[in-house]
Image (tube, rainbow, N blue to C red):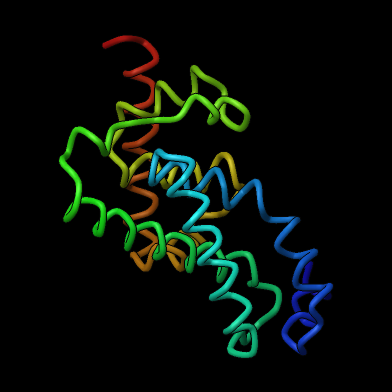
Length: 165
């Protein structure tokens, strides 16, 4: 992926397209975990792709492309959430599309739904996307110790939701 990121950074459109295709499922999982709606997730991903393309020249280290891209995606998702909360009643925020089953198994998703977003997002980034705590720290812009704490608390909350407590 590093070679593709370097080529994309130098303006290679095909390399950029391949990078985006390689990361599409990961971006979708992250966006849906935050936004809970396919339409909003698709919009956030589209905005992320555009921002990545426009700012590829600013990517300092190609080996951190996925971390950089995910941080842009998370920020786009947060912007959409803020915008949605200003314009829609809170009941609409909880709507979830049945199409999510293609990417997340129903039990996993149901268990995560009961967990606050700050824990759910870290669990998804860690377990689904395979990021390590330092990378999650950079993506979310929070201290690594906070990531570890939220990961531990998220695990506890997940186990409680699975056990039905």
